[in-house]
Length: 205
Image 1 (tube, rainbow, N blue to C red):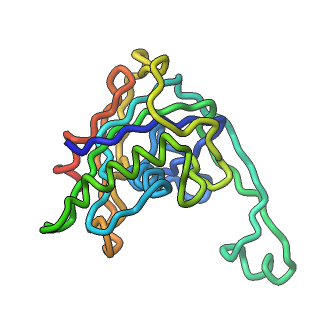
Image 2 (image 1 turned 90 degrees about the vertical axis):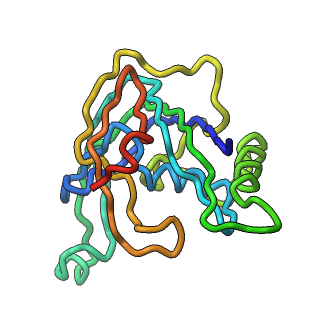
């Protein structure tokens, strides 16, 4: 088995629900693409990819309002002309912690080596050494984690969390590498702090 596990947590996180519009609201759990980006911050191997399989929610789900000044290209023409920003308001997760488990999978067969095994070994080694290709984040770039490493013995799923997550974003692309934009959604359940994605990966809409 080419299983890889990691734990991540921090003071704030934003895993945006695409349908929440200009005032974004976070999912209670990381999206599939956010989880894959966390793994890719550690390592990339040609011919293999990391597939999220299970999310463990290890702290109570708490939300708070978050506002920042936006000065990017999506402003109205008049705002860009006057070099004016506008206040971007969101609803984010606070004081969160997740344990992630997933599988390192092959994209294509290789005769000389197993790329999935190589990816698993690189991910584990770099996570333990605290090395990364680029800084990891909890959704938005400004939300840096206070912990990103192997599962800790004292961290366990919160058994009081039982929640339905309709329209959960599983995937953004139709293939794990060099894909086209084709988002996939599914209705998932958090049961006693655990969301098992294996059951829904084959039934995404």
